[in-house]
Image (cartoon, rainbow, N blue to C red; front, side, top):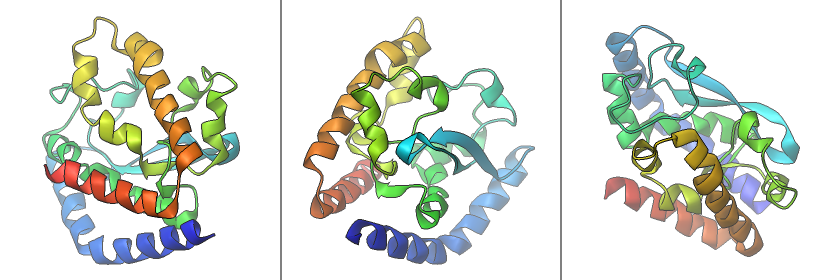
Length: 196
């Protein structure tokens, strides 16, 4: 209950404070490339239920129809504005809307697309017992995930066979040890990693 109250208050205050910044980012995205300002994608949330996750659009319109994996920061589908937004994780900020709605939490396992959730083992499905988050331990450890995938012969296969299982293991460990103050620490760790 405390976690949900914290999420609600922080997301509400955050959206209020960031609203002018959101307008500037939205204008930049519209001037930089054709398409919508926001990108929404179906992800899998708590209790295995689908929801729409919101981001600032960082790729050319319709790029996700080719592949769901982004390979490196020089992926030709990424827009000029998108490279900057991704570098500093600004594209993730609209997920505060998801937190406010209750689809997500500030901290929790990152939500996956259905295609990959369908590959989870029975024990891995336990990550769906809680709300997914904007950040988690795996997000910090694999903050350069796109660059890791860039060096692979088959990026999607490498993701499914190597990265995804390790991320899920970290998330299961988080669920076993989570605490309110641990979540606060993860938020600060995420912020400092982005700044660094």
